[in-house]
Length: 85
Image 1 (cartoon, rainbow, N blue to C red):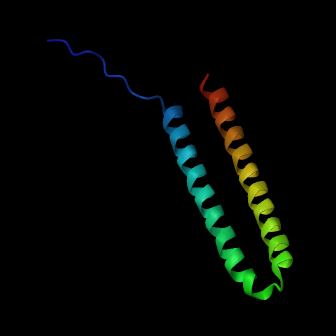
Image 2 (cartoon, rainbow, N blue to C red):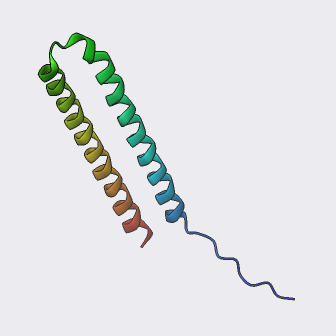
């Protein structure tokens, strides 16, 4: 009796999954870092507008960090795709 060949995922597919998992973990760490930052800064900033400015700056920083991380991952995936062709 002959067995049908088993399909296996190519290595680049595993790499993509690893990269996506890493990206998700980084996103969660970034969100937690912003929460920690806000909790630490809040008592030291006087007035609602001061807190708002600090929180807005922290959120902008987090957004920039996330964008940088995503661009890095895209670059890695593009490079891996080029190598596997």
